[in-house]
Structures are given as structure tokens and as C-alpha cells.
Image (cartoon, rainbow over all chains, first blue to last red; front, side):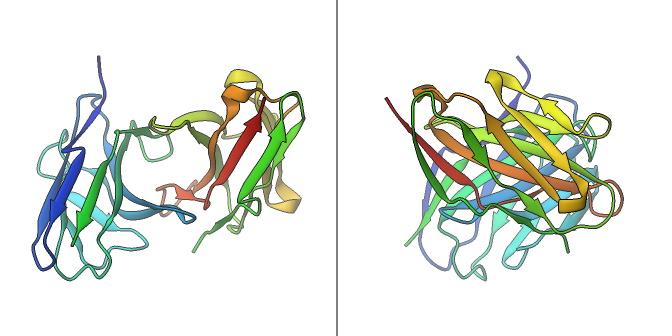
Length: 112
Length: 114
């Protein structure tokens, strides 16, 4: 079955450490996205990529970085510059930019 | 920048009651509109979408939404809710040109009491 795989499901890190969240899709989708979900704030866009080797900042990109070296993969690095990194992170993909999103199951990151 | 407002943060209904969840967006150009649902412990899934044509769109599980361009609104409705509709509902919008990534509202938590 095609889908989006995010790993790990739960991640714990110490403050000051960078951490990379994995997102892999086998749907052959061109576009991929990272959102952050916080209670009462919905989903906020961190970064998105409409094509391989290209990506754009979303609304809350500060303290995050991404790469898109392969169509299937869109890893997100949460750097030590992110002031409030504890959150639920969702990866999504779509056939093209205006198509409905397919979501992964998310990674819950806790930084202490 | 576009924004999406969902004014109802938490709605509690009894089974068989009618539902209407509000959604307003700020972008003045051509938009695509979506409602997503997140059931407890599950990932987000598409409920319905509007791209063009008939402004009244029907989705899964008896939900429908009406696009009113003059009001920049895309409200979600269901005539009779069930306990299984308990979930969080998100309205989302993207522009037809320019930045095409979805912007989501803050969500509405629906609790249906049996």
C-alpha cells in the first residue's frame, strides 16, 4: 500500500541538540510539506517542497531546516535555534501543489 | 498572506442534532477549499474539497459544505450528527497561484454526546 511514513513516532531530545525527523512517501507525489500541530493553533506550515531540489519557507520556518534530494524523502531538522520545539510534527504530500494532502501519522517531539 | 479563521473552537452536541462549523478565509483571489477531519488517535483525512463549479459540495459520511464567495466562507454542515463524528475538524485553503501550500484554521473540536 502506498503511503507516508514518519519515523520515529516519539522522539526525546535534550535542549541544545539538533534532531532530524524522517518523512518518506511512496505515492510518487511531487509536493511534500511539513506542518507543526499545537493545541488550539491548528496546523502551521514550516516548509514545503513542490519539486526535488527545491523548497520554500512556510509561516514558521525559523529554527528549522529541510532538504529534498530525492522525490521520496523530505527530512526536517529541528535545530537548537528553534525556541519552542516540543510539538507534534506532521509530514504530508500531494500529487501537485493544489491537490488534497495525504498525511503521515506524525512524530511527537519532546525537548527537555 | 492568506489566513483561515474557525470561530468555533469547541462544540458539544447531542446525537441527531444539526451541525454547522464556520470557516472564513482572507485571500481575495481564486482559492481551493478543504475540510479535513482528525478522529481521536488517527491521522488527518480529507472530508471534502471545493475547486470550482457547484458551490455546494458533498463529502464523506454525510457532510457537506457551501462556498459563499461574497462572504469568503466555506462552512461545514451535517443535518444529523452521530457519536462517531466526535473529532477535530480543520478548514484549509490554498491559492490557485503563488504559494499553493495549504493554510489551515485552528480547528474545531466536536464532541457528540450519545
